[in-house]
Every structure is written in structure tokens, then in C-alpha cells.
Image (cartoon, rainbow, N blue to C red; front, side, top):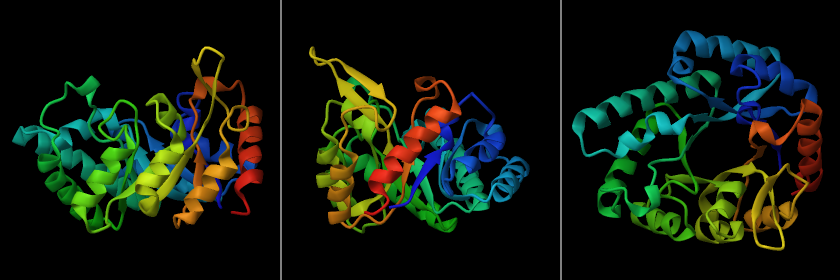
Length: 270
């Protein structure tokens, strides 16, 4: 299994256009690009970013916009909100196309502790069909990520959405830290949507004796990456895995590199 790094792991420690030169010496060749804000979707900026990526000898598998800036409005019942959000969505997809990405990572809409309205399957399934059609125009596969504060926070949601869509076009991202933050076993997400998983975000975690959760750098916690990766491969997984941690979890790039190398040694032969 190919292992890379998401630029989200260096969020605000460096600007995204400077990150490729930082990642290349780590030995990774494939990255996920986290785009932080609207100005980073503009074609002139994206072309600059692409040139930096090419100079560093890297390739982009997926693009991951700052979802809470517009993705909730993709599912809005207000026509102008939805239209504006779709316009931004197209900008992000076009950025992904310029970068050579094949996948778009989506959070979707927050569930806000169950208080969010108008997120019934009957309403959002047609919206997902629209989103899939638009992504196809850009040659990009739409992937929905499990996120503790968004509508896909439980395995059953992904399984039911997959069933209702029925055509296999929507793919999924497994995010380990978000699974445990949701109080779920990451293996349950593999069981629910494993045949349609095409991206994997790596972070580690630990529970103390009182059951309190803390996030850890990959290789420093309790996650059995080998067993989880094996379960995914048994479901047909052929995608890469990306170290995606919060930038305040480590002190320097040497520590990030060590985690990358640790998890790569575990997953490289899967």
C-alpha cells in the first residue's frame, strides 16, 4: 500500500505552496492537498502550486477543501445558497483537476448534535447525485469522509447512503481519528462501506484507564494499522493512505517524518 502525507498535517506551519518542498525529503511521493481558503481555488494560484508540486517530484491523489466554508450550503434548501455553494464546489474541483487529483474529499454538512434540519435521506440523496454528476465533469471521484461533527459520523449512515444511491459512484474516506471521536470502532466503517473506500487518513489514538481519548502521532498509540489495513484490503481496497494529523500534535518535521516512516513500514507490503 502506498503511503503519503496530507498537507493538512502542516496546516499553518507553512503556506500550502511551500509544503511540497518540505515533504519531498521525507521520501513520500504521493500527497493529498488541503486547500485552506477560497483564494487557493483560483487557477493562477493553483497553477503556481502545481509547479511547486512538480518541482518537488510529487503527485496529487486527492484534494480536500476547507469544507466548513461552503459544503453545508451544498445541501441548503435556499436556492441562492445552494447555487453559490455549487459555484465554489466547481472552483475546488477545477483546482483538483489542475493539480492532477483524481479524488475530492468531502465532509458534507454538520449534524450539529442532531439539530440540523433538512438532512433526511430523501432530500440529500438527489443532491449527492447532482454532486457526483458535477464531479464527473472534472474527471474527479467524489469521496465522503466520516467526520464526528458531520452527517456521516456513524457507519450506518454511510451504508444507507450507499444503498440508496445504488450506482457505486460515491466513494468513501476512512478517517481514524474521526471514527474514534465519534465513539465508533474504525473497523465498523470498513464493514459498512469497505467495498467503496478509496482513501484513508492515518492518525493514532489512545484511551487512558478512565476511557479518555487522546490523539497520537501514527505509531505512538493503540491503533493496529496492520489489522485495519488488512481488513480494508480484504474488502478490495487498492487506494493509498495519508498521514493526516493536526499540526499541533508534533514539534518538528523530523517527528512527522518518523511517523510517516513508521506507518509506511507497517503498510508497505499490503
